[in-house]
Image 1 (cartoon, rainbow, N blue to C red):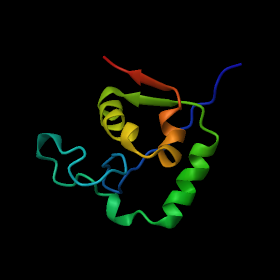
Image 2 (cartoon, rainbow, N blue to C red; image 1 turned 180 degrees about the vertical axis):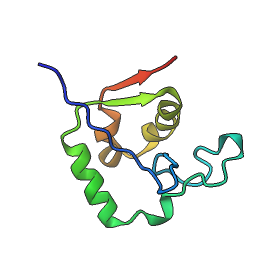
Image 3 (tube, rainbow, N blue to C red; image 1 turned 135 degrees about the horizontal axis):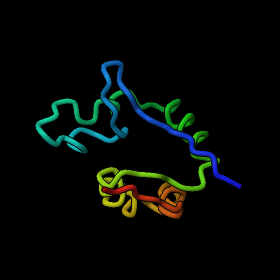
Length: 94
């Protein structure tokens, strides 16, 4: 049976697509809006994302997203980070 691919993307109205990290997370090429979503994250956001990831069985990432994710999440305490650290990750590269 084939798996279902669900895309959870963070996209601003002007087309900026970026993970919900903080300022400086992805500021390549002097991108001035790095971390644009972080100031808007609240408890409700956590509940929504918890629901999205509750049924997630793996993550499909680009190599840059994987590099950012793999440098942060292994250092997050067990209970908070276990769900993402134990999830299989598939990296699409060139």
